[in-house]
Length: 319
Image 1: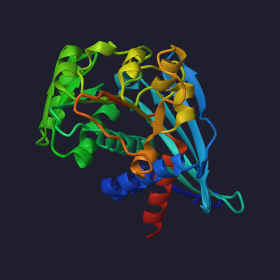
Image 2: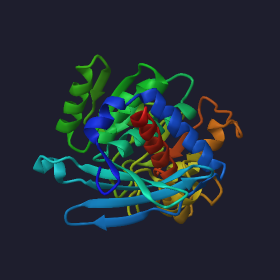
Image 3: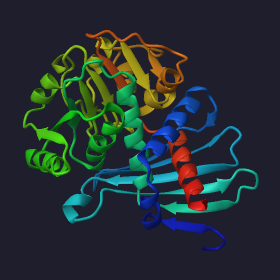
Image 4: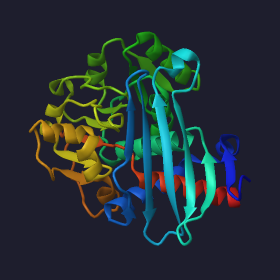
């Protein structure tokens, strides 16, 4: 305890991780967001150039909940070269009746990482082709690694292909997952990944499109999770023009600083072309995906997910 606030460290949180419970909580959060049941302003953003990093402040309240949450998460991308983790963070849970702080989850960024991985796995499953060839992972950081682990929970045991700007890192990550019994390989050219995979997850802090729109094969479902702050972009804007369906975790947030917003500002697609992922999960909207349809899910990470995972872990701690 610290001044009446319970402080919980990552050492107590990690043993409580249950992927299926997190997936269920994040799924419910996406549905609540799409139904307008969550009050959450646009995130606060602090961007750093030297060294390259960012700080996100996300906060919100779910209608009827006894608590609300404020999450701070950082990503400093030169840290691994210094032997430090790239991600840090914490979540504060507050009493919604009195405004008093209840619990500080000093999670070192892991709650953010897990809920992002869960949302990625859910979005990939939502419009995955009926016949999957291979699953491509673009990136070599923590979120790329977690994508391999969590996608298995929704897509089953698939063959994965990893590409990164540093081929050695891509090979190392592939070897790491191969050692656990998964089928994972790496490629030196991103084109080789795009040509062989029809489910692709991009998980990088890129500031410009990582590939051209016409390099993506027909029938591919692309999930972009890296463009989570202004100035970032992973997916080519012209890919959105090809897409038969564009999913977003939140329309306004993705317009503000997601890949979808980049495409709208480029004049490639208009506002209102997206469908919120929660609408599909709740089956309020049904998508008839054809074999050759190219589809996109743009995820920027929403406060509702932070609220959901914080609430889940608080319940598990109390139990």
